[in-house]
Image (cartoon, rainbow, N blue to C red; front, top):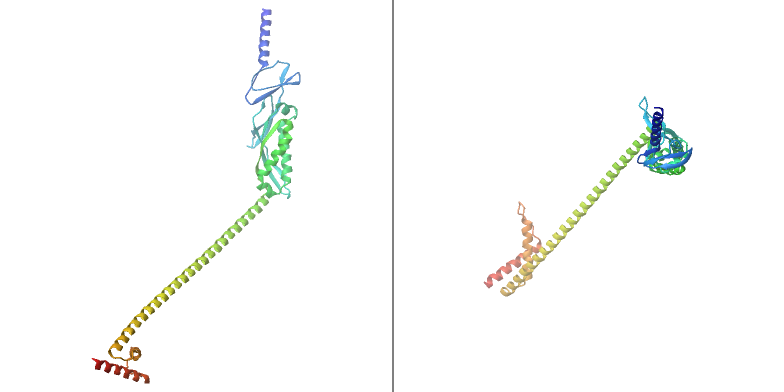
Length: 328
């Protein structure tokens, strides 16, 4: 029975050693293998075989976020032998930074990074997550210290880009690629926030007053232009009216003059043919009679004063009457 037990123990040990010699690495992960304490190779995802006891995985510190007793998030560092090659994000706690105009403000940042060289991430830095956190904090202080508070609030994209470039260059030695850096919150002191709110309110009131003034100005301009156009149109209408009235009056006078000329012509011909008299005396007498008719119109008392010359005209009319009667 003794040899059988020994053989069974040896078989179990062989199976245990074989099991330890088989390493299955998950997708997007890798394992650093050391042989007798020296770097041997990097295991990629899939099925891998190592020599037990002689080969051993090298562990790396990794950062995890957990919720504390008071509900706040705390960072916990644990050792693991699998290196995550996916893009990771670290949310760092808030820190106080001083701007160029000596304003103390709280800022927290997010960093998105990815391990591209597992060997450098293990051997070039002792605690990679802690080193990334401290480097991000110090770089953030330096970058914000070069800007005023207003610039840091309005130039987040510029700050993010500058931080990313600096961190990417610094972490390149550690086999890390920094993809993005985002500033989450920028919290100035309460008195500074109150002053900024007053300033923004004053700016909004100023813009509103300017817009109202511009609206009133535009309204007055449009009203003046409308009044001017109306006056121009009215003047043009009056002009057209006066032109048309003048044309009509002229045409009427021309027509009346033509009619009078035709009448005088006919009267002259008739007088010459019938009485062989002078038509001028007839026309003068006719004008006097028309004038006398206008003078007598609208008067209650019919007292009319005739000029001295009117007697001669009337005698001319009488002579014309007698002359026409004798011819009849």
